[in-house]
Image (cartoon, rainbow, N blue to C red):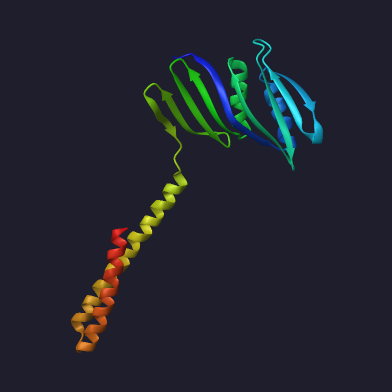
Length: 197
């Protein structure tokens, strides 16, 4: 297995309420990460997270914006203890981030949305390759449902055409036949449009 050289957080973003910020502090502390907390102007907070074993540190600044604390972060981490704590925190607190996991000869880029990985791209000597991409299942189901509605309308039009053809065979006057023919033209045109979709 390839050894990870470093992990880069690019444009990571967390938005937490005051209660969630307290839970965030307890969550990170439970992972053997030392936390130094400072309250700065306007109620904002600055946290320094440190892995005591390796000495690696990262500083997080949570700006108070309305009723939320917003942290935007870009950093490079090397040691696994702090790297894993940050990864777990982004997932647990539904953060958005682009994370580059750097290995010898290639980089894996993870795209997080609301704490879940939505896409993984491998960047190597041969270019970029999508390894994983979350599918939009709801969108696909909606599309399938819409396409089924078209099929149902086609069936209704075909039934109406059959009825009009039977009616045309029963017509006694030319005027009745012309009226049926006009309606058949309209339905045939609509059928042609639907089948083209």
